[in-house]
Each structure stands twice: as C-alpha cells, then as structure tokens.
Amino acid sequence: MTAAASAPRRSTRASQQPLSLADEQAALELSRLEQHDVALAMSYSLAASWESDQEQSDADAEEEAAMSGSEEEEEKKEEASAEEEGEWTQNLRDIAVPLPRLRRQPRRAPPVDASPLELLQLFLPPRVMHEFAAHTNAAAPHGWRPTTTAELYAFLGVHIYMGIDRLPRTEMYWSGKFRHQHIATLFSQDRFRQLLRFFSVVAPDPAAAERDALPFVRLLADRLNKSFAEHFSPDQSMTLDEAMVAYKGRSPIKQYIPSKPHKWGYKIWCLASENYLLHFEVYEGREEHPSPLGATADTVIRMTQPYQQQQLILFTDQWFTSPTLMHALAETGIRVCGSVNRRRKGMPDISREALDSLRLGQWLQRQKRDMTVAVWKDRTTMWVLYNHCSPREASSLDRWDDSGHKVSVGCPRAIRDYFFGARSVDVLNQLHYGYLIGRKARRCWPRLAWWLLDMCILNAFKLWSMPRDKPSQLQFRELLMCELMQQLPAEQKPREHGAALQPAHALASEHFSILVDEDRDCKQCSHQPGGRRRTNYCCNACGVHLCIGSCFQSYHARL
Image 1 (tube, rainbow, N blue to C red):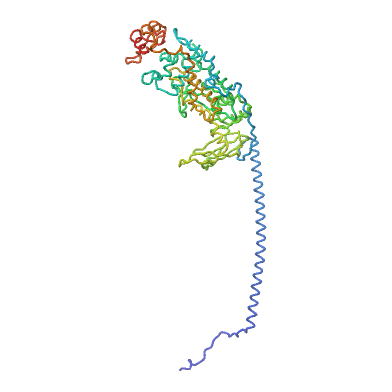
Image 2 (image 1 turned 90 degrees about the vertical axis):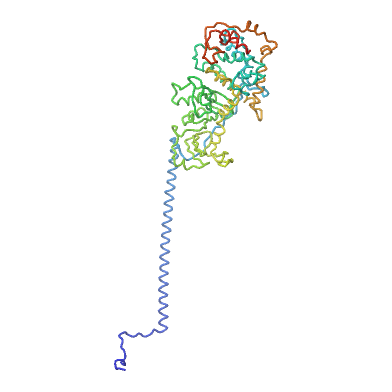
C-alpha cells in the first residue's frame, strides 16, 4: 500500500456539537407558543372581519327593503292615479253592484190554469183575428166566400199541424197516398189555397212596394210589441241578440250572415228573457243619422228603454258590447255582460306574450273603474266585458276533454254567467225552427208574418210552461192545434162526397169563368211543357186564372 493511500483525509466543514435534551424541549415549547399566538391573532382578525361583513350585509338589506318599499308605494300610487284617471289596471278591486228590483207583476197576468188557446188569445184575441178576416176579404177578388174569425183560427191550427207533420208540397195533404184526414175534413184543397193566397194581416196598401215586406206587417209588429211586454216581466237578466227569418227571395232588407244556420233572410233584433220574447225590431238597413254613440248603441238603448232603472243585467254578443255602450247603459241602471271584440275602442292593451302564456282554464283580467275585461282560455281565447259582478269572484264550467269526458274548468264568474245567460234568443230560434209553420210563397212578406204569428205561439208556450216541471213544446202545440181546429163550425167545413152537388150543377152555379182586367198565367197549362200561357179569365169561385175550355174542365175535375 502506498503512502498517499495510508494518509488521513481532511474536510473543510466545521463540526457542531449535538444539542442536549433540555435545550431541544425548550425550542419546541417556544415554537408551540408562537404558533398559538399566531392562530389567536388570526381568529381575532377573522372575527372582526365577519362582524364588519354582517353589518354591511344588514345595512345593504335595509337599504334594499327601503328601496323596494318605496317602489311598491310608487307602484300603488301609480295604479291609484291610473284608476282615478280612468286607465286599465291589473289591481282588481270589488265593486258595489246594486241589487235588482223584485220581479214586477205584469199588468195582465194570465190565470194559472189557462188553456193553450186562452194563452194564445192574449196576443191574438178574436178582435185581431176579425181584423185579419176583414183584410183578407178586402184583398180577395169578387165572388170570394168571405172568411171569418173562426175559419182563420182553424187556418192557423192547420199550419201548426203542417209544422208538426211536414210534407214537401201542400197538395199532398189531400192526395190519395198521403191524405191527412184532420186537414181534409176542415178545408178543401181549393179553399185552403185561396186562404193561403189572400191571407193578409194588415189593410192592403196600393202604394206599398211589391218587394218591401215591412208595410205588410208593420202594424201587426207594433201591436205585438205592446202585448208581449204587457204579459211578462223579466226576473233579473235579459238577452239582446239577432234572429234570422229564412227567406231567399227578392227584398231590399234581406241580409246575408254566413255564421247563421239560415244565412239568407230578414235580420231581427230580439230582446228576450227566460226564453220569452219581450221586444223586437226588424232591421231596415243602415241608419242615416245616428247619435254620437253610434247606431248600434242607439238600437240597444231604444230597445231597453222600458226596463231602465231596474238594475237588470243585459247579456249581449260582441256585435253590441263596447266600453262606450256599457258606460251609457250604466247611467240608465242596466248592467252589461257580453263577449267583446278586443279591437273595440277603449279596450286595454294586453300583450301577445301574456295571451300566449295562458293554458286551459287560466285567465287574466284588467279593471277600469267598474268595468272589467276577462280573458279566459278555453279551446280558444274568450274576451268578456262586464260590470255586473266583482272581478274577484271565481266559478267553474264543465267542459269536454280530448278523451270525451267532462272536466271542471275554473273561470271567472262573469264567464259562467255569460254562458248561461246569453242564450234566450238562441233558444227561441231553435223552438221556432223545430216546428216551422207557414208555407213557401213568392211574395216577400208572408214569411215575416208567419214568424210573428209563431212568436205569439212561443210566448204562449212560455206562459203555459211556467207552472209545469217538464213542459213539452210538442205537447203544447198538439193541444193548441186541436183547440184551434175546433173553432171552425160544421157549416163551414167541406161537404161529404155523397152530399156534393152534381158536377154540371156545381159548374153552372158556383164555378164559371169571368173576364177580369189583369192577365195571369193559366193555373193548368202553364206548368206543362210548351211554355206559359196567360189569360184574362178566372174562375168565379176558385179565383184562379184558367183558359176557357179544356184547362177549366181539367182543373175542376179534381175537385
């Protein structure tokens, strides 16, 4: 081994003496105390910061509450000022609705046990039918056998019978295959046709236009309007709506309404209550000089004038309903509830987003003084304007769901009231067309006259049904028909075949041709192929124009 390898190594690091146990424990205790002091100082500092943060948050909350309270107060002040200024608001409030007056007794209340004929004679008394007979005799040609009051009552009864058992052609009731004994024993076919042709309800007016129906029924309409109001008093609600009298002929007042079951005809404004017609007006066309409220509002105020200051409720459709009309009727003591067009002047502006957000059974409302607009979601969105109840009152309606079951759907009370209160005129239309009386005619006024007569029957049916639980219109018409047919005395009924005159004697004594000034189509040959033929000769007894010779003989061979 060499010398270098055996020499000891040298280091430049200084050597350190190891600490004793006491010194090490003293250092650890010092370090622990320092850490404790640091943790305590940090906890004190954090606690101070938490208190400052809480105080700040409490101050912020108080500031926010003060700001929100001031905003609410400002909103309430704005809504109150909007109400005072007459603007629509979402802040709904109760309204004071006056109680309706008790039902006043009609001036001529019918007896409880009155028969159908006695009830009908409240509107068509014998003196009125006597006037009808006089007008009919004046319109008939020379040689006509004068009609009487009893015959016209029976004539009306036959029309009720034809409305129940309706055949397409009038002559079928006397034919061998479809003969109706009840009719054939009262009138001969010839006599019934004569009555149907010359029947008049007012005095003939030579100056009246041929296509103007109103002069032929105006006096009867005025008389019925008075008698309808005398025998019935509305309880609480009334309905104003339009009715259509079906007619497709030529007339200057004929209207076309595509939404009606009978689209062509005469339009009549009807005021009804509890399925009873109180008042009506035939629409004659556009008014020339309406008031500032408008022609529609003038019509409503004019028709409801006898029922003002009674605190009644008037149900209307969107043709009539408007804020202007509601304000005008409120001054007369009549409350209104009706569907309304959202584009009417004075309606609230509701955003499309608010309307689209509605689901089935949901609604929103806007109030302006006593008026409230309710927008309710059914299958479609329904708008109703009303002032007859409080907007906070809610109700429900039974609706059909997609599975065919009835479900109860919530709605405002005004919606339910409208559904059940605005149907009187529609019910009258259904009753009228259920057993339609009258036959087709080329003249413009008979269809309107028969509507007036049927309204007398329907009002009599309402009076008859009031003390009964389940009244039947068919039963009422059957009873009335029998009573009317019994009014015709035996000497005015057609004679039996065995007691009839010989044909030659009958033609010589009753049926013979006379020359008249007016020429018309021959009743016999004008319906045959070859075109129409006109003649100045007519039968003295039948009153129909017939060519002399074969036409006269062929026509009378059927008698």
